[in-house]
Length: 292
Image (tube, rainbow, N blue to C red; front, side, top):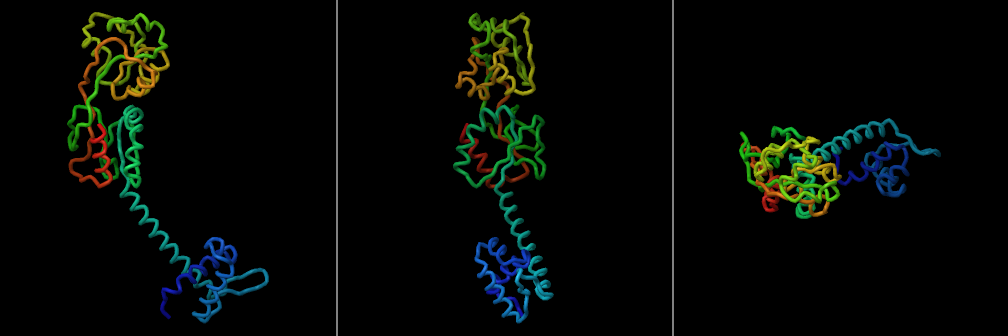
């Protein structure tokens, strides 16, 4: 006897009833009534000309024939469920974009702009990695990155995203700030540093200030921590324009006297030169380049 498509609803009802050993519980799972489940099972029994359940006062139990069919139906349903989950996961993987970037740029520049991207591309899922170490673009790794550097990396295609500049900032509540009216006065303040390639010595040199001793009192591993420390009033930090913008807008930091100095490095969108970008990653790159 061949399996017919019109048996599938009855088989689904039977498989649930066999698993629960209870028509009412199966009905709850399938969003049917208990009588509907019973009807499906009786119809299947009539078509197979065999009893699948023994009915008794306390409920139902499988017959030997019912147990054989239940085992086969359960295996088949599990196989179909596994394939469906795999298809769903594959579709989600195709719509996933993995991004690597700096924590400071992610926190102050990228995150505030992401709502515009998600509104335009609600089906695209994002994974953002902000580890300090440069990510490797191996198979299964990030699709693209936003890097701060010279603009050329072996094996990577690089698109210029935006330039940057640096200047000193401090909290309005920093003690002694009222007397800071010239670039050389900034050296009187406790200075906050991070691991950026260009630091206080570069800025003072560009400001024409020479022969002074700098009190680089606090050091942090990332720019965000340095700016947060400055916003609490412990010292002055050398800020990069792109990262410091929200702090200045909110009034948590103010720019101190002195020049705004263009940085040697700039921001780039990068991805493996040998690998064609998938459509969601290409959409994100296009959006980034249009956002700059």
